[in-house]
Structures are given as C-alpha cells and as structure tokens.
Amino acid sequence: MSAPAPPPPAVPSPAVPSPAVHAARVLLQALAGLGLRDVVLAPGSRSAPLAYAVAEAAADDRVRDPHAPALRLHVRVDERAAAFLALGLAAAARAEGSSRPVAVVTTSGTAVANLLPATLEARHAGLPLLLLTADRPHELRGTGANQTTDQVGLLPPALRTLDVPAPTGRPGEDRDIRHVGVRAVATALGLRTARPGPVHLNLAFREPLVPDGAPWPARAREGVPVVEPRVPAPPSDPGWSPAPRTLVVAGDGAGPVAREVAEANGWPLVAEPSSGAAGGPRLVRAYRHVLTSPLADAVERVLVLGRPTLDRAVQRLLAREDVETVVVGGPDPEWTDAPRAADRVLAGVPDELRAGLPGTGPEGWAEAWAQAGALASDAVAHVLATTDRLTGPVVARTVARACGRDDVLVVGSSNPVRDLALVAAWDEPPLVHANRGLAGIDGVVSTAVGVGLGLGRPVRALVGDLTFLHDVGGLLVGPLEQRPDLTLVVANDDGGSIFATLEHGQEGGEGVFERVFGTPHGADLAALCAGYGVPHVRVHDEVALEGALRAQVRGVRVVEAVVDRVGRRALDRAVARAVAERLADDSTLRGA
Image 1: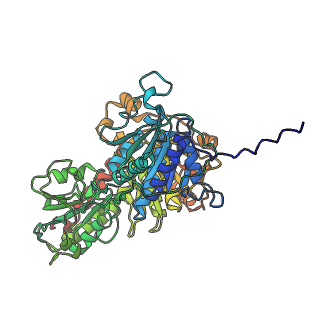
Image 2: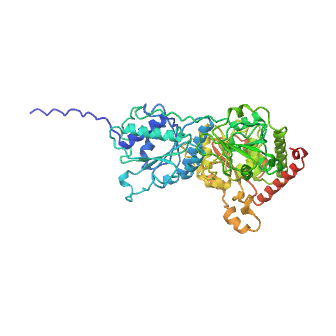
Image 3: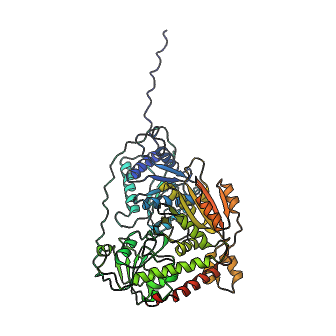
C-alpha cells in the first residue's frame, strides 16, 4: 500500500479583530480626522481597547499601521492629574489660536469620578475636552459586577454625555461610531452652540479587549458629515459716545481686543493677569487700590470683556447704579454679570470701538488713571521694601520681572494671582494662563505640565503651597513620558494666607482661624520632590529667588520660596494705607 497523500497546507484565514478593539480604532480615526492630536491615558483593564489603539497610533512612523492616525500619547497613573494635564494641553492649543479637542482615556468606576474637577474647570473655561471613559456592557450594569456604577450620571448633569453601547461588529456599526465622534467633537468645539467645553463619551466594551493581529481598518468618510459652525449675528451699533468717563475692565480670557479698544479710545484699562490684555500705556497698575480711591467715583461707564473674578472692588464698581455697565458677552448664551446690573450685553466688540470713536472723552481722564496707577505702584514698592523677609507680593514681583513678552507663566488661584495683579508691571506681558473657570487650587501642577507640553516652550508657574500639595502627584512623570521644561515657584507660607486677608482673619478668632482656615501642614517639600525625582531648591530672599529663576531649566524643577504668613494681614493693610495716602496727596488726581 502506498502512503496516504499529505493533507493540503492550511490556508490562514484573515484575522478578525474583536469588536471592542475594532471600534476603538475606528473612533480614534474619526477623532483624529476632526483635529484630535493629544490623548492623555490613565491605565486600566476595561479601557484596554482604547489603550492599545492609542499606543499603536502613537508609535513611530516606521512601524505605525498605515491606516492608524498619528497621535501624541501622554500616560499618567492618576486620573485627576491626567484630566488637568489634558486641560493644560487644550489651554495651550487655544493660546496658539488653534481650536482642537484633547482626549482623556480612563477605565470604569472611580476612575471616571476623578475627572470631575477638571471637567468643571473645562466647562466654565470653555476648553474642549473629550472624556473617553470605558464601561461595562449594559447587561452587567446594575448587577453588582465589579467596578461598575452609573457612569452616565457621574459627571455634571449639564455635561453632554453620549452613552455608546458595546460594539458587536454588526453592519453599519463603523458608520455609527464615526457619527458619534463627529457629534462629540462638534459639541466640544461649540460649532453649533458657540459654547465649547467638555464632552463625555461613555464607551461600553465586551471581552475580548486585546488585539489579535488584525490590521487597522481602512479610513472612511461614511458617517462623517461636514458640520458648519453657527455664525453669530454681528453686534448691533449701540450708539456709542466718547463723552462718558469710561473704564475698560478686562477679566480672564478677554484677549488683546480689550487693550486695543482702550488704546484706540483713550480709556484707562483695568486688566487681570490672565486677561491677555495686561500691558500697554493705558494699563492701570495696582488697580485694586486705585478702584477704592475717589478717582473711581467719577467713572460713568464700564466696558467689561472676559470674566473678572479677582477683586471685590471691581464687582462693587459694576454694581453701582450710577455706572452704565456694558458687557461684551460674545456668542456664548451666558454672559458675565455677577452683580446682575448690566445695562447692555453685546454679542461682540463693535467695529467703531476697535477703530476708535471721534474724540477721546473728557480731557485728562486716561492720564489721571495712569498717574494713579504709577503712584499706587510706587507706594506698594515702598511698603514691600520695608522688610527683608520674603512675602507673597515680593515673590510674585520677582517672578513677573523674570517673565518677558515671549515667556509663558501659569499662575495658581488664591493669593498668587492676586499678588501678581498687584505688582506686575509689564509693558508687554507674557502669555499668562490661570484656571479661572472655577478658580480652584486643584490640578494646577498638572495644568502647567500640559501647557508646557502643548506649547513646547519653557514654562514658569507661580503657585501657593496648598495648591502645590493638592496636586503634588502632578510631579509624577514616568521615565517613558515626555517632560516639559517647567519651573514651579512655590510660595510656601505653611498654610492658607488668603483667608487672613478676608473677614475670617479678623482679630479675636485666631484659635479657630488657624485650624480651619490657616491650616498649617508642616510638609517637607524638599522630601516630596526627592521622592518624585524632581530637583528642588529652597530660597529665603529675593536675591536667591532671582538667581534661581535665571538658571537654565531642563525638565521639571521646584523653587520653594519660604514666605511669611503671620504678617500677611498687616502687610495688606499697610499697602492699602500707603496707596490711599499717596493718592490723596496728589493734587492732579483731586481735580480729575
């Protein structure tokens, strides 16, 4: 008998990816085609399809699948830090004039809840985040399955959430996934609402969650409509007159147009550090104290751009019944009017204000404010020179002086941003970012890292010690991750000195104040930095701080400036008294 013929060689069947992996790839293709460039990933198992897809898209051009988009990947182990890093990347894109979303990828459960702080900040700051959260499939929800909760209602109710069912590989599913991506990006960019912000894509996945060798699908346009942005109506002519004594108030995010209007019309300019307008000949320095002087009583009209949040004196001015308040609200359906006293709300800056109205208003009006700002600034400097100890305003002034027009500065909430507003004297300001959407102290370290990575430029950040400790995990950048060139200046007064400047710091309640408001912590910042492998230097005087800021920076480092908290309330009172006396002694201001 002859031997049986050998069986024919097996013909390998083409690999078919799991529906979860395939859907993750299709979604990333769609998002990248709509402008996504950066993805921040926190590790997890249920989110594995997205993790694999992003890692493959971030691979070197020589090995990346030809159908995979080119993305930048940033990995963080803390979801809260990851979300604020994404927020910083989005802020950097906006600063460069680019409107593109930034994505955050997390697994299910409490990982999603950690996105809440950055989500709230992004919503109020109008920054386009895509929150890609993995979830259990619908059949496992409500069954007690591990790491399963109601993720659809976990983030703010006002947030647009798209709950995407687990893919099955059915016909037409790729089209539907692309359509979801289009809706998410259009909403995040505010194309139809003129209100950008975060969007939540809750993505259910079933096992298998890992790739099995199949290539990426070919890119396609099916399910990707072209979404035309809604064009807001042009602002109507409000019948402007140059005659009223007008003051321009530029809050956070006002942009350079606030400065342009002030200079074109000869109006004084009050500008917060993160307004993008805090420079030029019309800028009123140390404006917080000038607004409490008799000069402010003569204001007849205020033009508000951006979102002023720093000073009570500004809000008192806007609430006055004898002041006409005009708010430039832009196309956003909401507008800034905390005192609820606005007389007019404009959709944009009228062309006639950009060009300059005929005439410049009352003679000497803008000059009086410039003079008052200069006198106030001199008075502040005189008071700060009376002590050899570092104080918050001196730290802010030193950092401000180290920042030129081409520099980038991230500033934390609480006293640092207010101190900066008091002492900064820029002719041409640097790019300043502050998380003023909700003005929280959380996530600022991670935000600064994101700004540095997004801009690709050296960044300085000025934060308080509580702000630093609240996000000290933001220092954790793994050895495989890109590091920005970032100098973090921490004004360490061992607690919350801002409360000493408010009504809580009044004499007589020192015992209660110290525990529940002052909150001393006694943390060793040098030891914390050493644990994270971050260089640290501690300074006790202005000269040492100046030297530390001149040093070349590679990677992340911390400069700890030890400042006095006990005398903070007395210092603020001395500054206010000195400014008031200096302004009262000037005869030209009395006649303004």
